[in-house]
Image 1: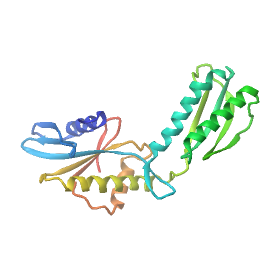
Image 2: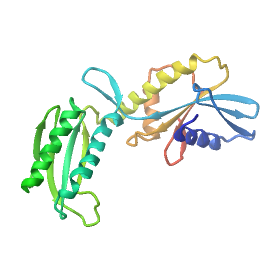
Image 3: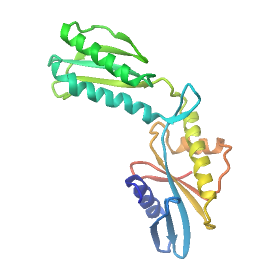
Image 4: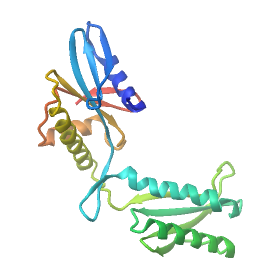
Length: 237
């Protein structure tokens, strides 16, 4: 069964086709994700997301979102557990660096440090750096906006990520092309094959990916590659 984002991509590609023949959408066997019938012609469509990858210290590759979600969930947990104990006129701002080597110990020590800070009422006027087991975090107190629901807020810095948007886009595209081409090449389907790319790396636009595609050395068998934004815009790479 197609996931919601896959259905979205399939629908948007089908609707964007400038053809006179009737267009029909068919769910695939996973793989492939789907087929598109244009008149009597059956076209294979494989769908994937473009998400930023990060390189770990051991050389393995993961999506950045996986690492960032640890920090985002931790910030939410801290606000739920300790936010009510904060003064009503103050926000505790936390700068988290991810990934951390020992998540459980890191979370425990950070929670204890914040509890002690609140209990003593000694709120830092400048950034207070905490050296914790597996990483570090920085704390800072800012005035709380009356409309702000949370009292403990923060932001994430991924130390494994690169600031080079074009190189990031090329790495993402190379990964998706290589994996999806291998999957589709192994299928018995002999007709045309298309690839739908749902963009989740919002720093890169269609022109960035067009440049990345020109730079890639990955060979593939896709006749068309579609680039779909979450706004519904469809472009051809």
